[in-house]
Image: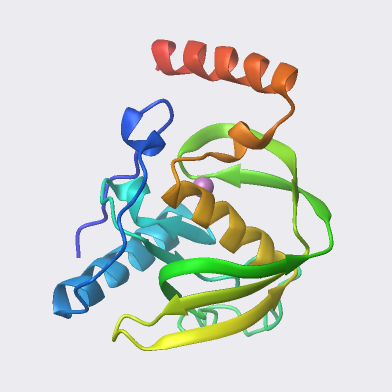
Amino acid sequence: MVPLTVLKYPNPLLKQRAHPVTRFDTELGRLAEDMLQTMYIEGGIGLAAIQVGQLRRVVVMDLRDAPGAPGTEVEEGDAELRRNPRVFVNPAIAASSGETVSEEGCLSVSDYTAEVRRAARVTLSFQTPAGEARQEEIEGLGAICIQHEIDHLDGLLFIDRLPPLKRQMVRKRLAKLARSA
Ligand code: NI
């Protein structure tokens, strides 16, 4: 498998809205698998298809290796056991409650993290790669991550969620970085 290229800010594609998935075929499964592998290689905990240039509402996630995530205490070198891959097709937040602020980063935004305010708990509706409809209650890191990824599907980055003044400063800094890269 060849890792997919993760688009970086300010690539204009990252501001697009992804389209709902209507075909649940082997190609969709392959995309999800390639996205997961790419995410592992890049060291992320979540990835939206739009970040690899696919305008489809597909998100992958694996919190297993993240600090504080349940199930992190596995034996070293047991790479397969450390993974808990999830694939969410057409994910949508049906309900949310509470509030939490945490430090976020993004594979599409190099060398920058910031505190972002999100709902603490969400009820997530989604489909499996086989097209089965599911609903799940998610809290903690998973809730934060899925809100971040659904934002991607709507053309939003976490920096778009910052207060206006901070957002302006960050955009300038990142644009400068992108030019000098
Ligand atoms: Ni991201």
